[in-house]
Image (cartoon, rainbow, N blue to C red):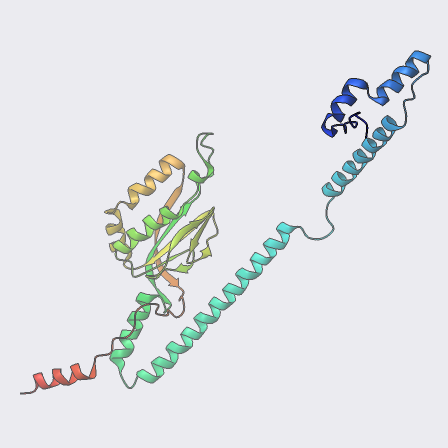
Length: 292
């Protein structure tokens, strides 16, 4: 064994620093510098040409896709399909509503046949209830009031929705007619009941989920024409419709009518109310208290 110390193992962590200090120039840059020193012309290679070809190909593909999207479709558009589906659903709803009215009229006819001889008073009460609830078609004299959208150009500061009849306008007129003694009312041929709602859905006005066609909306009310006109004039509805006309150009008119026919809404099912049935024990106690 000699006294010479063994060679130290190089530190791996110093390799990068050694490479940087001993070879500061990348091999590629060194080769390019050598070629320039020897007068060689550097080759441009196929890189730029390939990039140009790829750019042209992408441009052609983009133009073809845009032309295909702009070309008219041979089949029906999504809007046409949606409109057709809406029309079919509305027709189906109208058919079901007509069927409900026909069945209700058949039930009323059978009730009249069964009760005409047994209990005429009960039959008269059922007919009166049918008029109030809207399950019976009615006719008689009354008033016809029309609200119409404005077709005047009121300037850029006025929104288009302000010049159209809104649900609140029909609500105001209908409430005034009820307060004036109307016995039955319809809006756009849709009979109103105690459960009816007049509201907006987007730009459409709905009465019990049935859209009303514009631009004119007809409200018909059965009752004494002269009495209703006098009572209606005392409500706030005339001033309200006059304000709509002067401010937004919405037209309104009222005319007495000798005969108005309002349709039935069909059967009205009870949602929360139930027929009251007295307790048997209470009935016995009441009869004992009444007996001498």
